[in-house]
Length: 104
Image (tube, rainbow, N blue to C red; front, side, top):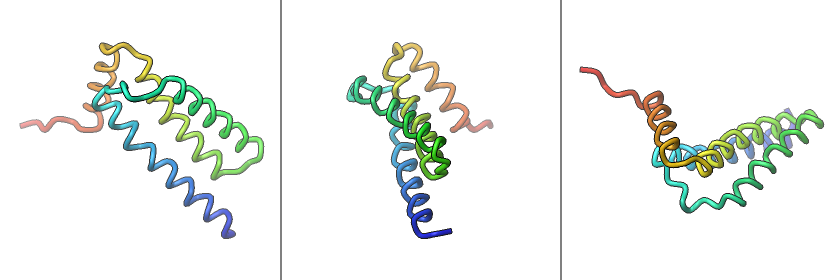
């Protein structure tokens, strides 16, 4: 593995891990007031296009990073667009899967 590929995978790791806390916070709190619909629409589109580019070039760091970031930013965009009642349903479902209640 050459140094450029190692740097690519490290960049991928940084990019993906930077999105996870934001997506989790939005799913958990359902708060999307500060999120710009236009900005996240462009972000999702950009990650989708980068994923296609990576596939066309067979560049795995680009494919992995951008497909995961596409999914995470897509979740944020969907949460932004949903009405409050639907956000609450998604939040409750995801939270119950990730943080199951302790049974006594």
